[in-house]
Image 1 (cartoon, helix red, strand yellow):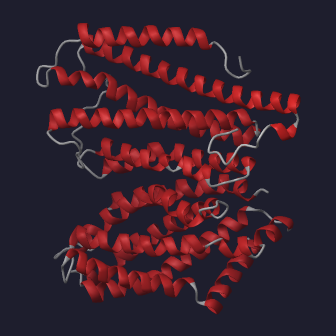
Image 2 (spheres, each protein chain N blue to C red; image 1 turned 180 degrees about the vertical axis):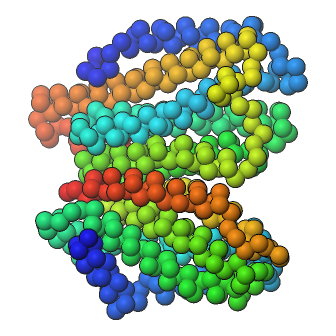
Image 3 (cartoon, helix red, strand yellow; image 1 turned 120 degrees about the horizontal axis):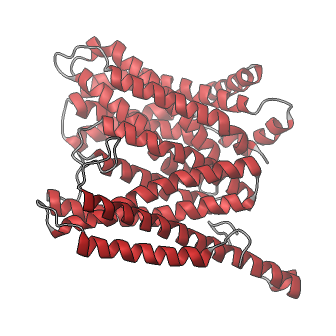
Length: 242
Length: 223
């Protein structure tokens, strides 16, 4: 197993158990919503996906900062994997949110809803992370620029939410607020378990991605050592740390 | 600061001698008004529509300057010379942001009168001081974020492509604040005073981005 990825098996089992338990709670324990009925259950997927992906983006920024401070390549890889996973999660989150919006508000997309709009802006911003990496050839410079970009974008996430929220009156239900939300007990329990499950899923997938990348780098290093430099074709341009 | 002012003087002198960027920005702004006139099919615009037209036009023209900002340094070895000199690297940020700010002000000297002339928004004369205040704060955002984005993009292969696609989302909060701040100024019977909320948002956004850019700019210049 690679040097920077540990406890992968334990984490995987914990994730599988938590996600299964959360799904069981969602379908058999959490009460049906009085107004929206069954479709409201997508909330247990959509909101955790959104929260986890936003935290993931900020984590990507924090890892980027660590890379700039220490210069260790593993932080660049963490930053890359965190942002990559967050992108996947947030696409899932925005699709689930769109389905929910269609069911409960009657439209696939609602511009008067700042949480939705700022979420879209954040996704659009982070979608440029990989094109940016892809167009820089030198790996060291690629890592440095990507880290700088990740730090700025990580700081952008909360600011963007504040600005967009100021620009419209919101209709989105607040799930997490300082007063502890407005969910009844069983729903709250289900929601927090789902949130935990999705967060664990994020961590697990991110670790798998890192493990795969480190394995690939290690394999190439060993092949080069065994067969000589010429036997291993150099990697073409790539957007990921390699 | 002496380094920064030397680079700034150099940039302005180059611009004065070549007249490359600013006239193109003027032209682009005027053409964009014409396109808006036909696209919207309106002889005059007012309110939020007018604010949107003005903001988008300034944004388009600003992108020209952002794309050009570091090209001379890259192509003619200015970066290498700058890195060899024993000077503070952040001076480059100050100088380039200053140059971009001056470009934006020069753009608006033409773009705002042309806006008044071609699209005739109501109450412009009465609200002019407030409008200029908002535009100045927006220019700071353009200058800081534009310099930062340009410094990243200039070292990429597809630099004309990367600059706008990372610049636009980063500028969005400032653009929202600018458009929303200008909108109420351009209606009949406008009070003529800017909303404190959007001024504060713009100023804060400028400040945060300036701090981030100062903190991170060094990493963009290393070889």
